Image 1 (cartoon, rainbow, N blue to C red):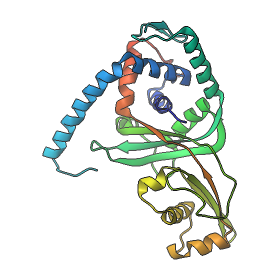
Image 2: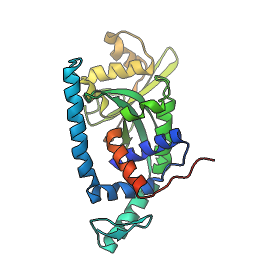
Image 3: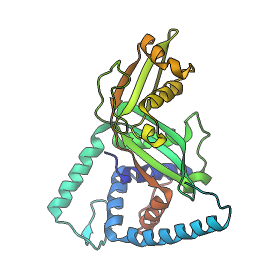
Image 4: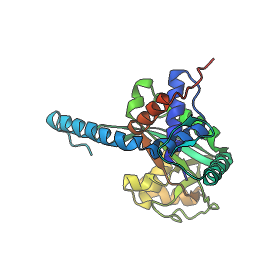
Length: 281
């Protein structure tokens, strides 16, 4: 399953691209992310962020009135922490993290913009159904979804503070089925394909999409067929599916998200530790 540290790595990759520097590795991000939260620094920032959010909320209401929805030594770094773990347990955790990073996953990276009121809008979502080593896949698709989603212009540096990163690791793929209703709303992602006039169409929705949109299963399927490029009548989707020999593959994956306002305090804490990134040549 994806973790907030994976989202933090997506932010690290995107920010490094804007700043013309090498990003920290996924191993560095995961270790520093855990240290940051173990140190209690995030609790202080949570309180500060709550105060900032309250102030922004008060400003919005008075403005437009719009209703919007131990001490230890790291294997990578050397610094003190208020918490400690037995060395054996720490080594076991590091081996487990290394194993996970070497595993391969199909994955998607999604970027959303988030308004001050908390509403979000899609700004890029691209992934792959071909299994990728985790670090390589996250790095590649953090940038691809930010800059190459044809539905949106490339994300500029000025938009970074309003972004939220979401990562979904895909698992439990089913065999293809001709039954378009053989899936569970809110649990399964869908990958469909069908043929119309000799042309093959295909598209996918991640597991969270239909539930977020409030769609029924039928509405989700019609929308997905339209995403694939079909422009027929809504009442004709069943006939089109049947005649076009439609196939559906269901899969699972829990989306995990992280906002810039959660990532940036961690990144500033990292900089205070003296952890440096190399500039690009």
